[in-house]
Length: 508
Image (cartoon, rainbow, N blue to C red):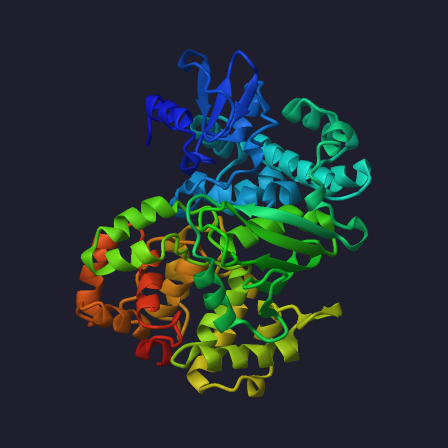
C-alpha cells in the first residue's frame, strides 16, 4: 500500500511505473490524469487520488486529453490478488458485466449483487456498473479514433445499451461529443471498419522482453491456430492467432519489438480482425493477459535480481514476462497433451486435434484457418483420435468433460485454490499440470514447478541444487514472483521450456 504523499512524489517525478496503479484528480481543473502526465505538476493541496478511473469519473472529473489516463496498463494488483476484488476486476475486464450484467458477475463470484457492490465501492470507489462504464467509454474512444464506423454502431459495439447513454457518457468522461472526440484521432491508427479490423497499441509499464515472449509462443504454436511470421519492419516478428470470442471469432496480430526499439517503449503494436466489434474489449483483455502486459516488471526484477544466481540474467534481460493465455480451456487441454513429452510433440498432437475437431474460419488468414476445439467437442471425441497412452487419454477426456459441464472452472473470477483442488480431484491430473495451469490459465504470479525438467536444468546451470526439495526451498526467496523465476530458469536452461516435467502420478 502507498500513501498520498508517496503518490504525490510519483506525480511530481512523472513516474510511469504508477500509471494505472492510481489516478490523480485536480480540483482546480476538473480533470484526472495518469501519474506520468507531462502537464505542469499541480499543487499538492489541489490533488485527490483515486484507485480507478471509474472512481475519478464518479467524483465528477473528466479524463485528461493530453495523457489519456483511460489507456494506461491495468493495475498489477489484479494479476496477483486472489480475493473478491481482484477476481471481480478480472471478470469485468473480460466484459462479463456487459454480457451478463451485475447479477451474472455476482453469481460467478458466489456473492450477492449487494455484497459485491458494497465491497468494490469500499475499496475502489466505484461499483461494478461504474467500472464497466469506464471500460465502455475507453472502448468507445478507441473505436471513434481508429475506425470510420458510424457513431451509432460505435455505441453498441462498445457495449452501451442506447445511443443516448453513449452520448452522455462520452460527454461526461471526455468533455467532448462523440464527433468531437473522433476529430482528435491520430491518423496512424486508422483502419478499415468494414472488415472489422482495428490497429491499436497494447500499453505496458517498464521494460518488456518481447523476444522471450515471441520465442515462448512460437515454440508452442499450434498449426492452423497460431503462427509466428516476419513483421512489417526489419527484425520484427509477429505473433498471430485465432480467437474464439463471445460474439464471434477473431484474428489477432501482435508485433514484438524491433532491434532499434527500446524495451521501455511502452507499447506493442496490435491488429485485430473481429467478426463482431462487440468483442473488442474481451479480445484486448485476453491479449493483455497472454502477453502479461499489466505486470510490474520493476518490482519483479528487483526481487529476483537480488538473488546472486539470477542477478546477471535479470540485468541482461530486464522485463521478462510470464505469459498467460487467451483461452484457459484450450491451455488445459494442451497441458495434458504435453505431459511427459516434448513441447514439439505436444504441439504436433494439438495440431492434429485442431484439424479434426476445431471449427474452420470462414476464410483462411495467412496460415491461420482453425479455432481450437472446444472442451465439449473434445469430450465427445473418438478415443482412437487421441494418439497417447491410455491413462493420459482418460485424463484428457475426463478434464474436457469437467470443463464442458462446469464442474471445473478456469475463468478469471474463479478462486485459484478451489480450482486447483477441483483439478487435482480429476484422474490423471497432478501437481505439475495444476501448477502450470495456475501460472498461465489463472495468471498466478507466484507458482513454482520444482519437478519440471527445464526448471531443474536451469537451477543446475546457475550452480544451484536441482532436486525438487532444494529447488522449492530456493524458490521461497523469490516469492511472490516465483512464476517469473520459472521463466528465468527455463531461459537459463538454454530454451524456453522445450520439455515437460515427468510427473508419474499424472499417468497412474
